Image 1 (cartoon, helix red, strand yellow):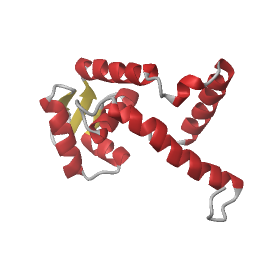
Image 2 (image 1 turned 180 degrees about the vertical axis):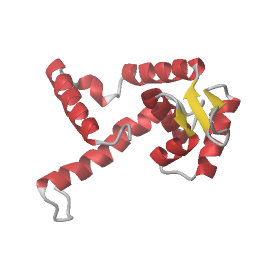
Image 3 (image 1 turned 90 degrees about the horizontal axis):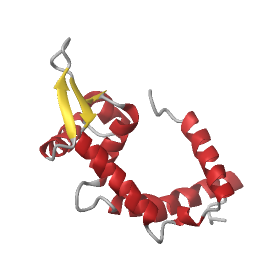
Image 4 (image 1 turned 60 degrees about the horizontal axis):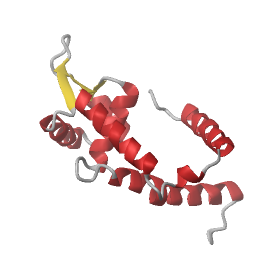
Length: 147
């Protein structure tokens, strides 16, 4: 238990959040550190999940300004990791999608993380993996993944 006087659910959420960042998210991001930044990886992940998105929608989902999104997308575009297209109906709208090169980059990073010896998810038994999948699907279904 934490020293914050939280109920069991709140305490577990706090511990899960901190430990997930420390042992899963950061090590996963480290698989890309010589290739793309965590923000760029997040943008590619959202594009991989949602498909083509407008720059505005992507910046909204990432909680960054449009100016920051322009810089992120610019760097990804410079490395041929995304495709940018203007909306035919309104040229002010820029649509972005993940490139085949980025698909390969993400797949390789996920594979490196999965194969990493200190990946805590590797220690899960088959039944625990199924429980994790079910829990993750439940949480994802309650999130606004595709607003």
